[in-house]
Image (tube, rainbow, N blue to C red; front, side, top):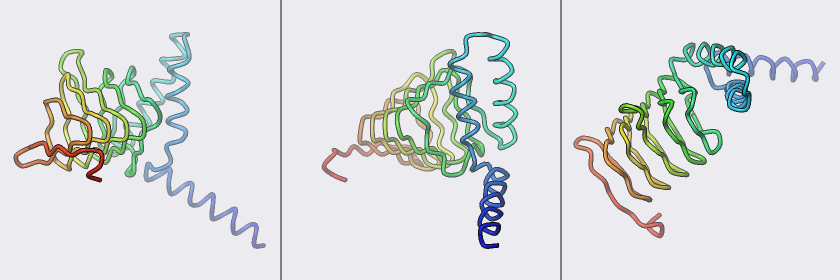
Length: 165
Protein backbone atom coordinates (compact mmCIF):
# COMPACT_ATOMS: atom_id res chain seq x y z
CA UNK A 1 0.00 0.00 0.00
CA UNK A 2 2.80 2.39 0.81
CA UNK A 3 4.50 1.78 -2.57
CA UNK A 4 1.27 2.69 -4.37
CA UNK A 5 1.07 6.01 -2.53
CA UNK A 6 4.69 6.83 -3.36
CA UNK A 7 4.20 5.97 -7.03
CA UNK A 8 0.97 7.98 -7.19
CA UNK A 9 2.63 10.96 -5.54
CA UNK A 10 5.50 10.86 -8.08
CA UNK A 11 3.05 10.70 -10.97
CA UNK A 12 0.99 13.50 -9.43
CA UNK A 13 4.10 15.66 -8.91
CA UNK A 14 5.21 15.02 -12.51
CA UNK A 15 1.80 16.06 -13.84
CA UNK A 16 1.81 19.23 -11.73
CA UNK A 17 5.37 20.09 -12.84
CA UNK A 18 4.43 19.50 -16.50
CA UNK A 19 1.36 21.73 -16.24
CA UNK A 20 3.42 24.55 -14.67
CA UNK A 21 6.09 24.28 -17.33
CA UNK A 22 8.79 23.12 -14.92
CA UNK A 23 9.10 19.66 -16.48
CA UNK A 24 11.25 20.57 -19.46
CA UNK A 25 13.41 17.45 -19.89
CA UNK A 26 11.29 16.32 -22.86
CA UNK A 27 11.55 19.74 -24.49
CA UNK A 28 15.37 19.68 -24.27
CA UNK A 29 15.48 16.10 -25.55
CA UNK A 30 13.47 17.12 -28.64
CA UNK A 31 15.69 20.22 -29.03
CA UNK A 32 18.83 18.04 -29.03
CA UNK A 33 17.30 15.54 -31.47
CA UNK A 34 16.36 18.32 -33.86
CA UNK A 35 19.93 19.62 -33.96
CA UNK A 36 21.30 16.13 -34.72
CA UNK A 37 18.81 15.13 -37.43
CA UNK A 38 19.79 16.05 -40.98
CA UNK A 39 16.54 14.97 -42.71
CA UNK A 40 14.62 18.23 -43.15
CA UNK A 41 11.02 16.87 -42.87
CA UNK A 42 11.84 15.33 -39.46
CA UNK A 43 13.41 18.62 -38.36
CA UNK A 44 10.20 20.39 -39.35
CA UNK A 45 8.05 17.94 -37.37
CA UNK A 46 10.25 18.34 -34.30
CA UNK A 47 10.20 22.13 -34.74
CA UNK A 48 6.40 22.04 -34.80
CA UNK A 49 6.25 20.16 -31.48
CA UNK A 50 8.93 22.35 -29.91
CA UNK A 51 7.13 25.53 -30.91
CA UNK A 52 3.83 24.18 -29.57
CA UNK A 53 5.41 23.23 -26.25
CA UNK A 54 7.15 26.60 -25.92
CA UNK A 55 4.02 28.51 -27.00
CA UNK A 56 2.01 26.71 -24.31
CA UNK A 57 4.23 28.39 -21.74
CA UNK A 58 4.60 31.72 -23.54
CA UNK A 59 8.19 31.23 -24.63
CA UNK A 60 10.22 30.90 -27.80
CA UNK A 61 13.67 29.46 -28.46
CA UNK A 62 14.88 29.86 -32.04
CA UNK A 63 15.74 26.99 -34.33
CA UNK A 64 19.48 27.73 -34.58
CA UNK A 65 20.07 28.88 -31.02
CA UNK A 66 23.32 27.41 -29.71
CA UNK A 67 23.58 26.18 -26.11
CA UNK A 68 26.79 24.87 -24.52
CA UNK A 69 24.55 22.84 -22.23
CA UNK A 70 21.00 23.22 -20.96
CA UNK A 71 20.32 26.61 -19.41
CA UNK A 72 18.84 26.72 -15.93
CA UNK A 73 15.29 28.05 -16.18
CA UNK A 74 13.95 28.28 -12.61
CA UNK A 75 10.51 29.42 -13.84
CA UNK A 76 10.30 27.30 -16.97
CA UNK A 77 9.87 28.88 -20.40
CA UNK A 78 7.43 31.51 -19.13
CA UNK A 79 7.89 34.57 -21.33
CA UNK A 80 11.44 33.71 -22.40
CA UNK A 81 12.33 34.72 -25.96
CA UNK A 82 15.73 33.67 -27.31
CA UNK A 83 16.68 34.60 -30.87
CA UNK A 84 17.64 31.87 -33.29
CA UNK A 85 21.08 33.45 -33.74
CA UNK A 86 21.95 33.68 -30.02
CA UNK A 87 24.75 31.70 -28.37
CA UNK A 88 24.33 30.78 -24.71
CA UNK A 89 27.21 29.50 -22.55
CA UNK A 90 27.29 26.81 -19.87
CA UNK A 91 25.15 26.91 -16.71
CA UNK A 92 23.34 30.18 -17.39
CA UNK A 93 20.41 31.06 -15.14
CA UNK A 94 17.62 32.68 -17.15
CA UNK A 95 14.56 33.89 -15.29
CA UNK A 96 11.05 34.61 -16.64
CA UNK A 97 10.19 37.24 -19.27
CA UNK A 98 13.77 37.56 -20.55
CA UNK A 99 14.37 38.62 -24.15
CA UNK A 100 17.62 37.78 -25.91
CA UNK A 101 16.94 39.36 -29.28
CA UNK A 102 18.68 39.89 -32.56
CA UNK A 103 19.06 42.87 -34.84
CA UNK A 104 19.22 41.55 -38.37
CA UNK A 105 21.11 38.30 -38.07
CA UNK A 106 23.28 39.47 -35.18
CA UNK A 107 22.38 38.31 -31.69
CA UNK A 108 24.05 38.33 -28.27
CA UNK A 109 26.67 35.85 -27.16
CA UNK A 110 26.18 35.01 -23.49
CA UNK A 111 29.20 33.68 -21.58
CA UNK A 112 29.37 30.80 -19.10
CA UNK A 113 27.79 30.90 -15.62
CA UNK A 114 25.77 34.08 -16.25
CA UNK A 115 22.70 35.20 -14.34
CA UNK A 116 19.94 36.99 -16.27
CA UNK A 117 17.23 38.41 -14.02
CA UNK A 118 13.49 38.58 -14.68
CA UNK A 119 12.39 40.95 -17.41
CA UNK A 120 15.89 41.69 -18.70
CA UNK A 121 16.36 42.55 -22.37
CA UNK A 122 19.64 41.77 -24.11
CA UNK A 123 19.65 42.82 -27.75
CA UNK A 124 22.05 43.29 -30.63
CA UNK A 125 25.48 42.04 -31.59
CA UNK A 126 26.98 42.13 -28.09
CA UNK A 127 29.01 39.85 -25.86
CA UNK A 128 28.20 39.19 -22.23
CA UNK A 129 31.27 37.91 -20.39
CA UNK A 130 31.57 34.89 -18.13
CA UNK A 131 30.02 35.13 -14.64
CA UNK A 132 28.20 38.36 -15.56
CA UNK A 133 24.96 39.29 -13.81
CA UNK A 134 22.17 41.13 -15.61
CA UNK A 135 19.72 42.57 -13.10
CA UNK A 136 15.96 42.30 -13.35
CA UNK A 137 14.52 44.78 -15.82
CA UNK A 138 17.86 45.86 -17.30
CA UNK A 139 18.10 46.71 -20.98
CA UNK A 140 21.53 45.77 -22.33
CA UNK A 141 22.75 46.85 -25.77
CA UNK A 142 26.50 47.17 -25.15
CA UNK A 143 29.18 44.61 -24.32
CA UNK A 144 29.37 43.45 -20.70
CA UNK A 145 32.77 42.37 -19.33
CA UNK A 146 33.30 39.20 -17.32
CA UNK A 147 32.35 39.34 -13.63
CA UNK A 148 30.37 42.56 -14.17
CA UNK A 149 26.88 43.35 -12.92
CA UNK A 150 24.38 45.37 -14.94
CA UNK A 151 21.64 47.11 -12.98
CA UNK A 152 18.65 49.01 -14.40
CA UNK A 153 17.16 52.50 -14.04
CA UNK A 154 19.35 53.82 -15.61
CA UNK A 155 21.35 50.80 -16.76
CA UNK A 156 24.92 50.88 -15.59
CA UNK A 157 27.74 48.37 -15.39
CA UNK A 158 29.47 47.59 -12.11
CA UNK A 159 32.80 45.89 -12.78
CA UNK A 160 34.01 43.36 -10.25
CA UNK A 161 36.93 41.01 -10.27
CA UNK A 162 36.77 37.26 -9.64
CA UNK A 163 38.14 37.71 -6.09
CA UNK A 164 35.33 40.13 -5.11
CA UNK A 165 32.74 37.33 -4.77
